[in-house]
Image (cartoon, rainbow, N blue to C red; front, side, top):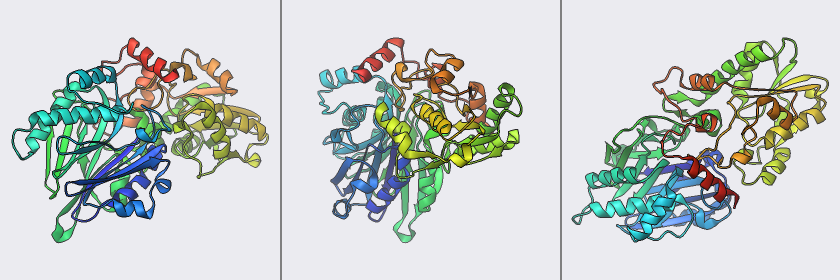
Length: 485
């Protein structure tokens, strides 16, 4: 999971890109980068850490130009603490291309071999983004027949990228002197949305980004989602072209975006994230009522912030008092996306504090958005008991995460997943909870897609069914070996 943005404007874009990345910070905290195009010249600055730490006044002044893109990184491929892995990536031919990417490619072994032996291209990192960039550059090079680059050539190149690349990818690229290209994988697993803003006599400004909240904050009109398999090409003069570049596209967005990753004030694929989380709470309340004796819960408490909508609905539907028992330190990052178990465990205590006045002598029902490794959940149960809770019922607005996620979320190792090969009572004992209740898979799906045109969701970490059809047991074992080595 990462956050990406690209802007074409009749005026300098550096501040706009920076502001957009601040709004996307929740999607990645490992590193960040901005690139701008001033005519045929690229300017790039990238660094480890969060956006406010990475860019100084001198950096912003150097990012000149009226076209730009930016990235916030949450490491799922490559090394989290290596600045060499920070995006964007650059290749000098054809023309000069610079690219950012959100997602994970699942055929990197084959691509690495083809890039070296067939395309004669070299990648200097372990990032699959650099591979995607080089595949795009190779295919674009093969389409150029004259001095000029036209949209047809760009779209044909993207069609070839779809043929060669497997996995999830929402990507934005700048082609020096020509324009900005955005494209989405044929399943639309990772999000991408297009916006436009009138700039008076100067013409239109265009933006492509991961979440709609960026458009709303900056006063852009939402044009539409970039369709699965579609490519958008915006020239430096602001002309927009689009084409479906995949043979059999179908929309299967990632369910985890709605459960945890996206900000609640975003709308993705026509689905309000906030409304989806409210509906998750409604469905979860029915399951809680089925498995929990009446009168066995005194108060309902959320783990701030992403589980708050679901917890409010649980309390309302069950007719139980809603209380805020955990205070959140907002200066600590999201624990799920921190690298390493030790770091996550330490950060839970730094991030949350249990207020003993809300716990003492009470039977507590805790609502979290999901349980992945169990590190955070176990610490929270321990904190509730230390604060004086009588009983702790722990609930998850998502189903058990039993399988690796290979499409852009850092869940590659089955051994890290607390629910893998465990029954629910065994997980409850592992977490130290008196009772553990999960959302049902079908309830999660229906809660998210209700009232929308979306009919499918990417739910592989809950079901073990991988939508691209190319993820084999051998591949999962290879990913796990490389993650643990």
